[in-house]
Image (cartoon, rainbow, N blue to C red; front, side, top):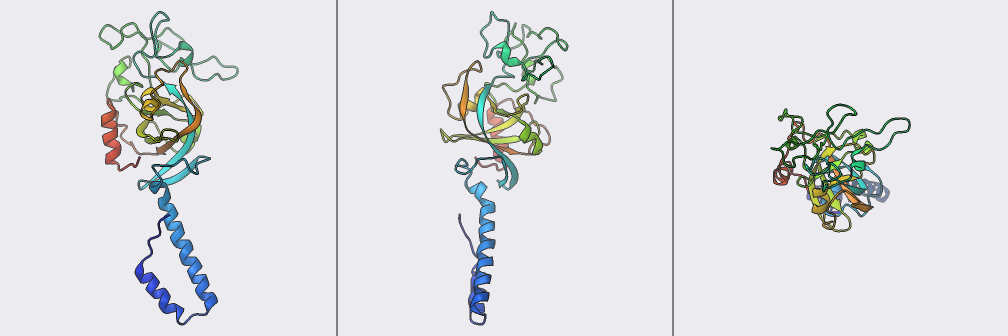
Length: 268
């Protein structure tokens, strides 16, 4: 904690000390220290951006980079949704299994496919054509999409999990006002690496998922697909910045995403 008192304040305190009762002086000093301590603590989340793991045990709202931010600590399953080779027929080599394309089961309701597009609700998967990145594979979607691309079945309309850092929003993030496309800073307590990301998908109430590109950027280079790969311990800090992408800017490269986050002044 760094205190930066104003010299004029302390000069005034010295002058007062010559006229006031010692008990009054103690009260004034205590109030001054409390005020300065509170001011310093407001800066702590920004100053501690490089090492946020020390005291984060529960979700919290903080100030960081001059913005209100919402911070959680989670495990991180690997999400490959949006990658053009995420899902496909069983005879093709894919990044994930078809079982993982479903949303978590809800008692009494049929499971809903969220990982890839279907021709209609409950219908067959939409297949990529000869001019798409992986002909014959399914068109995998993310909730955050390029609103300027009207072709719904175009794989390029969605975030490629192998190229773009994104997180899956959970219920706590939604309650904090986080929206699709908002910027995120993620930090690994194990590796010490951090990365810019955006909120790119949903479907997991816990929010404990990140794209394959993100987990690898955080230093988990041993993770290579979504079949059985995950960060099993709650050692990833996700710092959401609500309403930080109001125009829903879409990113086709991580470089463009990083540049946009830096222009916002987000610390990582």
